[in-house]
Length: 92
Length: 127
Length: 181
Image 1 (spheres, rainbow over the protein chains, first blue to last red):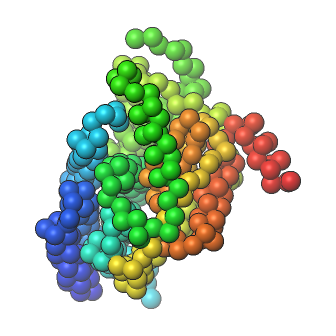
Image 2 (image 1 turned 45 degrees about the vertical axis):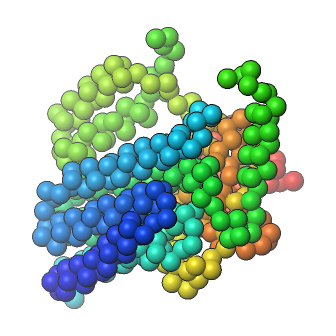
């Protein structure tokens, strides 16, 4: 049964990653791309999680936390940078 | 039916649903018209998806001491996701990424314009 | 740096949380590890000093458990709502930005309310006005004034629930007066 689950979720996650990559390529603005990159990282995290659950180990757990941290720090940094560049009169 | 199969079945359902949540996020990213709606798609399924997958992982490990660390991982996600969504949304609003024709009401615009007018009225002496 | 005196009672939730994280990361809840974790927690709280969060001094567990369960249910509903909207409506979705004045002025309550409503169906915080404690919320699928009123009521209800859990006594009595009226 685990093999079926693995195959199904691998297909679903690949489709999701393809969608996110399309949005990164097309995204009209920088913020759209950041958002899509964040989602792509979340999809990687989901893949790591499924690998752990199917093979019953916990080796990727710290990797998972690191990935969500990178997504968080990355999108916050870019959001601030974008806001500052367009509107340099106001602090924030 | 022994409990082993039940646990396996539940975690299998959780894993597939969690993967589907990632797909929901991707569909939302592709189909929604503006940045703000895409933000909804990027944040909410992500949180539920990680919850389902971590629960499946906990069920598969079959030991009690993995649950606290999974809980900590999920709580961190819960705390960081709204913050980054808010930062992106705020930057998006300020840099005019909205499509006004897609909004049925905008109660922030008047406030922003008022603040801008006040800044202009204060003049260049301030800064 | 000017350090305000922090009582142990005020610091206790932070210390307990730090010990819990320490033991969870080691995946080891033995007494020795608990003790060492407590030592490190005290050290961290002393060396890396941050301004303390002004808690209301009360925490209602009986209210918190149902709130957490309802919150979990709402998280599930939110994801499926997004899935439905993405598939069924797609590009034709209409949203709105709604201003919601909150009752409370304490930072922790405004933050908690913002976090919770960012995760429940159809709302996302765009801007916070701290001086008047008003949240500006982007609601997805808000097509008319009726939907906007519903969203506003949703947010106010969430805040009421949070006040019942960890608001100060004054906020709580104001809330009970309001609901009685």
